[in-house]
Image (cartoon, helix red, strand yellow):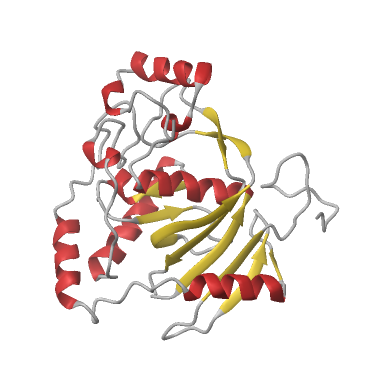
Length: 270
């Protein structure tokens, strides 16, 4: 559906702004519930009642991550873990940007653990992640890319949904969409590639203020969320490539000195 005569700056092929994303945020201690639709550029629209009911049902099945006051022991343990994370302030490899761990780092190739509690240290680490992402010129960053083995991501599409998502999960998907991807942990010539993924995904997560988010994401937001959730599951976009494109990217990584032994020999899901 095209709703404006002017091309949207985020959508492909000169399409106008449209309500391609649907968002519901539950009520919290200091904020009421929200529901809206949004274009890929962040322009907002009313959320249709049927979409609101559908996402309300999805959100109802998602347990909010509790605050530190509810589980102080777990919060202290999480903060201790985050304090011990070695955050690369300078380039540790020519494969990645400052502050981002490169391909081959063990933390990047293992599934992360659920956060479980929103602690003060987690909030500080989230701010650190957002800063690293902006400095690196990225549109998304997973916590393990910043060295922490916890399930949290940051993104640069905050006009659509809040920038930090805690314990995000993909709970539904449909369609296919081919879109070019790269990675802050693999910044070498020839490493970007077209990746086929679901076009639309439904994602649930907790926000830093403790509210539950449910989003039916399409286009760019869907792609960013899938890429970062893959990171949190220990999967890199290179693992989803097949055929000649996969071989070309792997050759570029090898020429740049990347550790191909860190990547499974077969494409993900094959």
